[in-house]
Length: 350
Image (cartoon, rainbow, N blue to C red; front, side):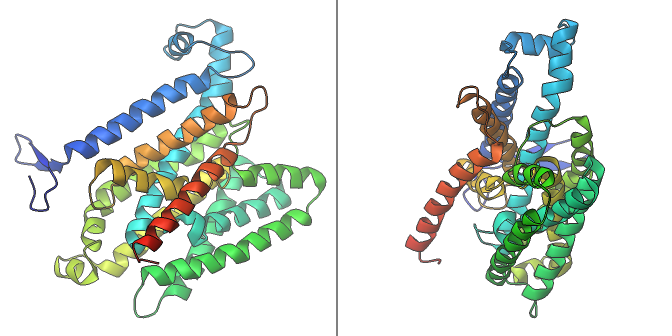
């Protein structure tokens, strides 16, 4: 048991290395992983050619017939893997942003980073047709430029969370107008494609859409969890306390914001600007773990579970008519945002 009253356990290796972990947080993360995998199996089995969960599992294990193997491995599995990776990336970057700005509204949707990535991707779609690699590059460039401008505008003898949120809200409003203008200037074909992409959609995703995101996650997720996780927990105690404990606060904050922006950009390139997952996942993870701190790993697992469940609902809940996954996350997340704002107001924080 720690001094904060939160139950912790320790694993010690023969070499003398010890790792602290919180059993409840570990249980929540494991539960989210199980939920995500179960939903993924049902999502793979959905479509015009329905498959039972047993058939899906046998096919994934290499025991299905050639027709089932083609449908699962080439047509449906890339969409499911994209949903899991995008959800995990959004959940993790949402936890990072909320911890850095110390505000539950610190989501890339509200701070403007998602709209910046969307602006860069739209320019690529209209200018070059937007292959997967070009789309990822455009989204990254748009998010990095937006993030740099927001950081510069919000800087004043240090970075304050509420100032960053206010500047981000303004940037979101401006970029929303810019993106709408870009769509009105495009041809009918490009505009239709852009509108569907802006909603947040997993339709037609292939392995070429998965690859840039997967490579980015391999690099960025360990960097956040292992490289900056401890410093981020210290920064939540306040900048002065973090300085006293040896954390280079501004350098760490900038590194975390940069990593989060890249995760947002790669996720947007793969599935469009899916809304509210980055806002909701960290808050749900914190409420379930009942643990202070950024809850990085539970938020990652929660984001993956939320998005794959939303995709399953989008595929199955409306009969033969499938909805873009962004419609489901927008409706659910918008309701959650209203509830969160009401809770913050009752608590006197806004």
